[in-house]
Image (cartoon, rainbow, N blue to C red; front, side):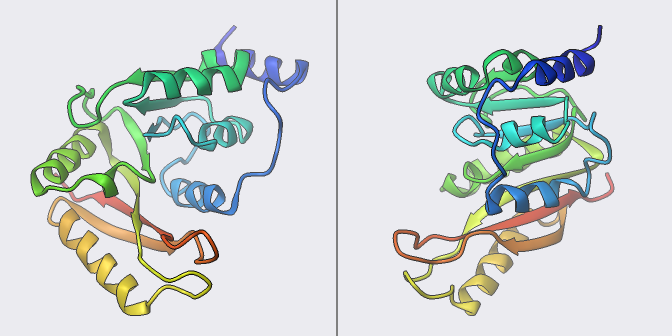
Length: 205
């Protein structure tokens, strides 16, 4: 019996974790990912995804070829416990995204809401993008998060959003083309760092 049928059987028996609707932020991520995830067997990598419920939402939406990579073994184990028996249908990698070896053209979608924006040096970012380029299929996409400063209880400065987009575009060029940008977190009390999602695709190699 293949993994797809096994996973479906487990869901019929009963969910291994509480079922809930994805947050607005995760719904936005999934809409971006749908550009390349043309079937439920698309290979999806969630970078730094151990603390997110994105993998839960993708499983519930029927995706069956998922890999979660995180530098924290403890975070991965916590997510496995949360998912219960469903966790066996997911690939788990404890590794630094800058150091690990990726198989060439292994993934249709690379998703990262937090890791890239924490890289502080040009060398780190160049290495990161080289890893994305190696791991993605030629027609794949990467969905990468970037923060946009703003003040609580007000919208982000349009100039700041434009500048952030220009900065990200200059980082991706010339290896990638920018094909989408969206704001996924609004400013509000206790939340002064909204996130933009940038969808990029490799240029012809």
